[in-house]
Image 1 (cartoon, helix red, strand yellow):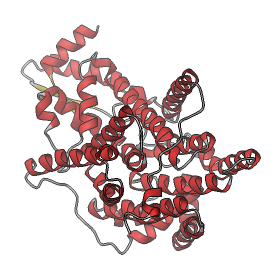
Image 2 (cartoon, helix red, strand yellow):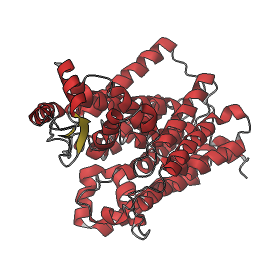
Image 3 (cartoon, one colour):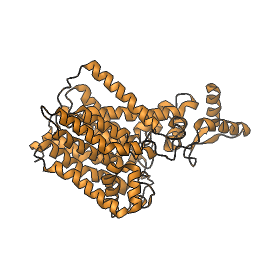
Image 4 (cartoon, one colour):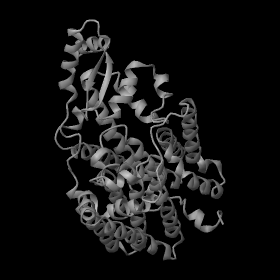
Length: 449
């Protein structure tokens, strides 16, 4: 059955674009810049380029300035590896000290922009319409819950790569460059977040269906990334800070946060949950089924295969992370569905992808240009209200403190205590800090001035 028609249709080979290459290149560059600008613009209050957020400073930057590159890349945090954030912070640590938060925020925004452009390209086999694929990119950068904790930082960049890896495993590139890109996306995603291993069933179906080794570069990348994770996990000697919780609350959380959240956004979902959490959960489950069932009932094998993949993977990619990271009870008491929203991001984007695949099928074919434009407009009408309402929601980063305001304070503390070896720089949120040596601080601060 794995080798049947439905499985082959899950990994279609897209037709080459009819657009001239210079036009395509300009379009991708413009989209790359636009996504990065939108990601940075969504931050309210103090700009993201002036604050160093949470683990980016506490863990990644503090370790980057204290240890060698090899030591930090082999280090674990919460018991697993974070290759991409650590690599990016290593590069930012080489620049001027005052510009560290700017470099980190730009790395996060540009990383999202790059992944968005890749998803736009990789989705061509299932979503032929460029307009609908542009809606998918919009769903990524304008994802309502992303503004709470996922934008313009490195610690949460792996959650974006999780979704990109999903598309990389569905993509069937014909060029060597495309196969290399698919492999790198999966490798870096898995090496930065081990939960990307939840895509192994999809990889297995692909390997069983497409027997040519050239068609399985993404699978190779995924396996290599997980091998890196295994090495880091074994070296960590069982270190972890998560306690698993029961599964009873997870289906309800999936209904409210994913089934309802992709449609009503952050404020809308919070309002419905505040009115009646059980109603939000039931309505969310009904919306999930209403989105999946039509795709399963279509005669088109490709749409059915994609819908089956999403129907199986979306709940799993929500439930397992929530269970393993012990977030279930917290999700039932949190005041906003935006908190711990990273666990809902990939499943939510999978559902939106399924809706766009269905829309693309219904408007495909010669003479259906008006239908295609109508489908794009309808998708925008459905998704845009939440995009607009939640574009600049307040978050915990908006009040600072700024990195630049804390540098003189830390330097003054070092000078006031000549015997002091290490100093703490308070970052955002203020309960966190970066540890840096007074010697390095004095040298680099002098050099910056």
